[in-house]
Amino acid sequence: MHGTEDLELNRRDLMAGASACAVAVACPSSAWAASGDASGPVMSKVSLTVNGTAHEIDIDTRTTLLDAVREHLHLTGAKKGCDHGQCGACTMIVDGRRINSCLTLAVMHQGDTVTTIEGLGKPDELHPMQAAFIKHDGYQCGFCTPGQICSGIAVLDEIKAGIPSHVAADLTATASFTTDEIRERMSGNICRCGAYSNIVDAMSEVAGRQA
Image 1 (cartoon, rainbow, N blue to C red):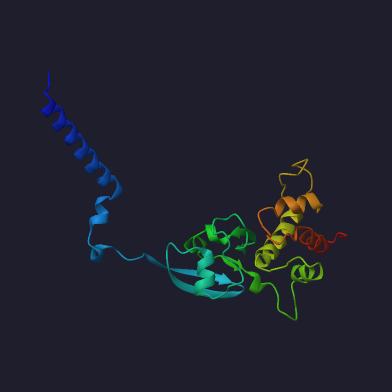
Image 2 (cartoon, rainbow, N blue to C red):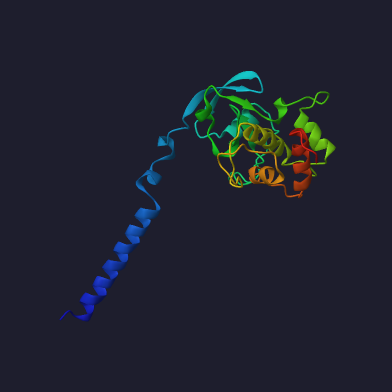
């Protein structure tokens, strides 16, 4: 039988070993490296056509498309809302498709064509969707409006192209511009002011339907 001293020593050894393991897991070997040894960010040149203008920017490869457009090109229409792809405030149109620009890296869009709210219309020559949003009061605070408008344009293009949605009763039938279709397809764009019905009215008008 082991004596009391042996048991006490074993407990001390066990606790010391467990503590050492915990430190090793929490602080991997790379964390102990001198700060001067840490490598800098990996940079890459990315070519984009944004709102009809070609740009080549030298950016950290971890930069999202949203940050590249906002911080490097200074086009701040697309908003950083949740930064998790849940609110739609950052929606841009890339090669004809709407995307959450906060969830994609800029380097993934080499050579792509990007459209932001700034590229849709001018104050004296608004895009039909912009004009409809104003007419139907499809915004209140305006924070989400750029993403709503970009998404709205893409949604109508999706319906015209016959792409079905989750509310489509028949996936082989031609998609139609119904309120249910518009609401379903726009569900990824959140409006905290609650202007949803007005947004549907604006999109319906652009789609050629009676509000």
